[in-house]
Length: 373
Image (cartoon, one colour):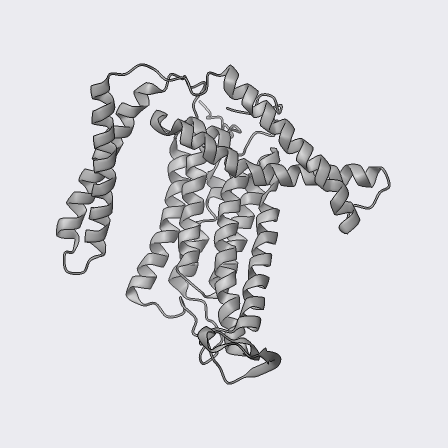
């Protein structure tokens, strides 16, 4: 009998998988100052976002994070020119009139010579921070934050709601600004400039107030804040396990970072602390009386996407620990950056979710049903 090929059905990938992938890219970006590697990370994140983002409102927020990254780079370079830094160099590009400062501000310089080495160092640092922001923006554009809230443990539900509201503020603000500018263009009004900015502020504030009221009504209708009854002993055991587990995680992490102790003492304490914290969160989840409607599955595509992000982070951590040349570009003296093969290959692994992840559905839920998942 002839086999029939069934195409992959569109579905939303688990939001946790997208966040793990993005955190792997962000970890890699934080380990290097090589502009070639950072631009490669930006290109990979942008391609995956273009290939696998949905038509939801938050999916259009990636461009806003890229613009924010450009602002970060500009601020970093301007501050370097105005205040100077510990980076010195021989190639003087231009000189800013220097303002004399009092003696108690010794070590701070306002103005003076601006060198190419100092500008390159500030541009590399700004590009690194901009790349980390772009990775976070990629996670915001790919993952539904409201679906991510549904996967959190019951003990962290209240905290998760606050985090979700904070994460959706910027994408929704960008969506509202785009909608208002389009409406102004249809009316034949200017959509750029200070005058248009003043006219846009009031509709933006009104939209934010309407969303707050809708969110409050949705939370009240779903019984937000209502907890189940648990015994005093259970609450005490939960607090002891969570606090003791967090202390154990901190102590185990310190033991792993301490060269004298090594992993012999740090690893068991870290594992024990993590298990105690998980047990405490599981007990604390009994207080949350809520149900999950159609939870997102964690199947093979989720494992592959998360593994690709972990592979990128592992490649950069291994390269940093072994001292691979080109991961950190020196600026004194100023040299031309080269592209190391191992980290570059690790970044290219992060392209796999563009094909491994299932295509997202194109239908967009109504705003009333998407206020709180």
